[in-house]
Amino acid sequence: MIRVVIKHGEGRRVAGGHLWVFSNEIDRVEEQPGHPYSPGCLATLVEASGRSLGWGYYNRSSLIAFRLLSLSPETDVDELLVDRISRALDFRKKIYGVEDCYRLVNSEGDLLPGLIVDRYGDCLVVQYLTAGIEALGSKILRVLTDLLAPRAIVLRNDGPIRGLEGLGSAVEVAHGSLSGPIKVRMDGLEFLLDLTGGQKTGFFLDQRENRQALGRYVRNASVLDLFSYQGSWGLYALRAGARSVLAIDGSSSALQLAKDTAGANGFEGRLTTREGDGFDVLKDLAREGALFDVAVVDPPAFARTKKDAHAARIAYERVNKLAVRVLAKGGILATSTCSYHVDRDEFLGCVYKGIRSQGRTARVLEVRGQGVDHAPLLSMPEGAYLKCVFLEVL
Figure 1 (spheres, helix red, strand yellow):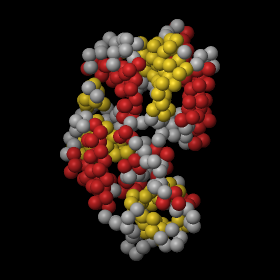
Figure 2 (cartoon, helix red, strand yellow):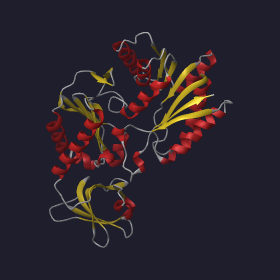
Figure 3 (spheres, one colour):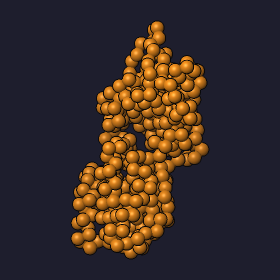
């Protein structure tokens, strides 16, 4: 392995359990005989004094230049992959029992930085987010195939974060075969998932437990599902006894999938759709005098980088203000942000401003995060990106 030597005093964060080393924290990189540099190559991490801090992989083209895989001096990456992925699978089985839809590997949260694996029944969707993980791709696929014998493995290597690693974009079926959307059962509901063309890996698994929790507030309610994608919030609400759901999204194909899924679960006629920009549709609904008992606001990330945070805070305030306009007195607002760069207190402040701008106030019922299959490391707050708040708007 090559050696990555960090600057004096820069080892404290890694010693404290963080898995990243930034490029400006590295003093030099020493190539070893027979181990030339390549993007994402395995490397040992050492302090200026020579003390080992572990090993991982290095990419000089990335701002996060080194990612730690192990604190030990071991170098058998095959054994490490089997151990980490097996442990991740055992944990999900313990939490979800016979359920077979969940995030199987959650990058840093499962001590495999850069690797995402989502399980949807007998199919897996895998994302290599870094050059180091992509370099280990064939080994990872072999472990997954041995452990789960999946019908198909889809590589969804089309996320924008790959560009920061100097990687291209591609989607392919790397194992088995697929023909169109698949059917899976999750929490007693049947879903149609597009694993090759849908958003993310085909479903938004991180909100699953929050959708379950919403059930206590929706009995006999009219529900607005804003930025609905395939209407998952609305489907969970209907299962919990909601009277009706209006799903709003900018994608006609996603809304068609929502209608098809509603029909497959016996909710035909109780879920209607409206295509358009979420902000614009909210304005239209207010002009029409529409009122809902429950409003779900689950937008895409408004802040993908730190420089986007100010504009994102304005957008979160605005969208919640517009949602409150169509929410009945005493109605429930379930609102979320998946932007790590807007923290919980900032997000609550944005929601507060939006509600107060309409001359209303609210009670905070629940402050929630991502599901346990997306659990972050305590030493890496960067992993705690999702904030979800349930409020009663008075």
